[in-house]
Length: 115
Image 1 (cartoon, rainbow, N blue to C red):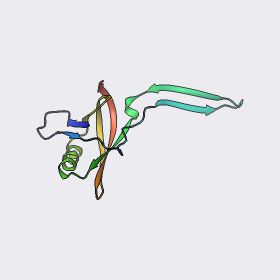
Image 2: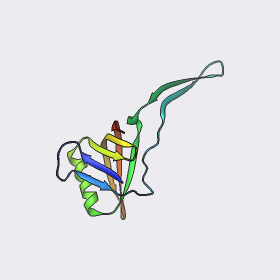
Image 3: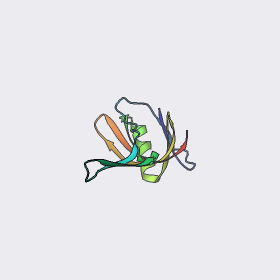
Image 4: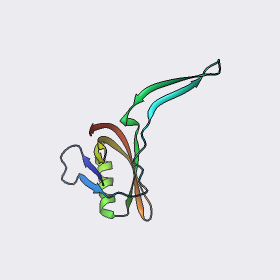
């Protein structure tokens, strides 16, 4: 289950999305760059980990009520609260893309708010 809600009170601003095997809950990675040096070696710079690098692609089966709720949140709020198994995050709903039998919601994580 994935929870999405408005950050402020909204009686219609909270929903639970059932898990789907095609959903991508984002990968974890560090901000690392590698540069080749003139002597044939490399320099690796590690700028650490940031939750804000995470992107989610949530698949929703074509349930008109859920799709309508997510679309409403996208239109009304610049940031929402997204709750996953590993924590709660402040995030932006970037897009809602509908197909014949499903809907893909793209979410950009801004920051972790709790674990």
